[in-house]
Structure formats: C-alpha cells, structure tokens
Length: 315
Image 1 (cartoon, rainbow, N blue to C red):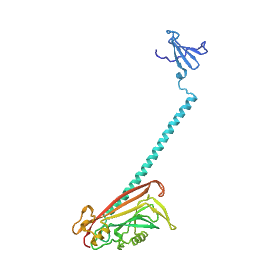
Image 2: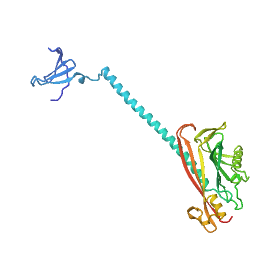
Image 3: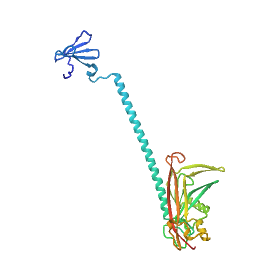
Image 4: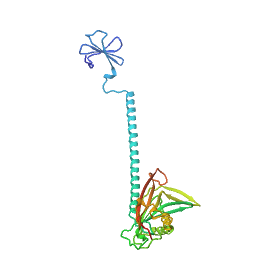
C-alpha cells in the first residue's frame, strides 16, 4: 500500500486522549503524543502503520537539532581550516627549500666554471685557497682564480689583479658570499705561496670604488667564535684543494728519489717530456633555510672542480 499523506478534514478526540483525523481513502490518522497511526478500514484491527510525528512535519527543526547541525558544521569548518593552514605551511616550506637549493647550486656552478677556465703556469697553479685564522683555528674560506678575459703571454708567470676573480665571505656581513673583480688594476699579484700578501691585497682593493662586487648568496651560516678576547663571525664556506702529482712528488723526482713514470699522473697521461697535472678543488657551502644566518636549519651543498695543465719534465 502506498504511504498516504495526512489530509485534515475534521478532528475529534479519541479514547486514548489523542486526536483522530479522517482520511479520504476511508482510513483515519490517529495522533497520540508524537506518534501518528494510520488505520485502514478494509484491514483487520491488528494491521496498521505508524509514522513518527516529527517525520511528517515540514520545515521545522528543534533547538537541539539546530545545535547539533551547528556543531557538525563547526567541526567540518575547523578541519578544513586546519588542512588549509597545513597545506599553506608545506607550500611555503617547499618554496623556501627550492629557493635555497637554487642558490646553492648556482653558486657552486659559478665557482666550478671559473676554476675550469683558469689559466695555470709553473709559478701559479690556476687558483689559490687562502686561509683565515683565529687563534689556533684555520678556515680555508677564500678562493682566488686566475681567469683572464684574453690570452696571456707565455712569458708571464703571475696574474694581474684585473685578471683574477675572488670568492670570499663579506668581511662586514659574513652571511654574504661575494664574487670580486678588480677591473683596470694592472698591478701584478703577489707570488702564489704568499697567502698573507694576497689577503692584504684583496682587503685593500675591496675598500675601493673600482671593485666589482656580486652577492652570490646572503644565506651563509655564521658561527660566533672568540679566541684571546677577539670575537668573530665565521661564515660556513670552505675550499679544499689537492694536486696530482703533488709538490712533494715532483720534489722527490727532481732529487732523483722517484722516477718520472712512477709519479701519480692523472689517468696515466704523461710523455717523455710532459705530464698532465690535476689541481682539484672541493667546495662546501652551508646555507640556512631561515631568515637568520645563525639560526634555522642548515643545508650543506657540496661541489668539485678540476683544472688540468701540463708539467715539463725539466724546468
């Protein structure tokens, strides 16, 4: 039987204390409390259908129902807001890491390109690693590369100051890694073995207006150090170089303690008069993901580069 909807024609009070409403089909609706009973005349008295009164009321909600609905909407809104905030934080974190990775990779690539295009001679091995010191600590944080823009005469053994490029932390703001050039300075640089003279020459020219300064990154990690009452902020950039054959290997050969063929030539590339020497560089950068150079997560970046040049058997 299809469920009918109530149609109020007239009302009367039943014995049970409820209200009875006749239905056009011949049956009746008995409303007792909040329960509605539908009686059909052509069925036995034991047969009836009942409906909860609330289910037939249209467009009406109790205060309890409204409070439950509001609570559910609030919980859903809170969950959606938390999900949105978490997604936004994850996006900003990923963006920061992507920017940091790009800076680190571009900086290492720029240094690698300069090293591989360097010019080497018997007196200057293409690039130098200079160390700064604080007490007993030594920090190889400065790289000097002989990178001329044009050909160099074979008679000249040392670079001019306008032919070098320097990678070092900014003395005033150690969290910045600088690339320095000194255009127009035709003075010949110090010998390769005089590190203090090189550091003094670079520091002097850095104060002039002719120096070209490029900031490669401003996210270097810095650490506060103090020795003998002298404080300093040390930047997290380090350079390490290695020769094959080394100066000790070549010195043993010249003294007759080692054979020419026994020297550790790169890929065994040597002849009767010349051998291929490798000057290898390892680069380490420590960049900080946060806005402060002394706090935040430290992300290390590593790179390497190599310069190859010929060494004569008899100098």
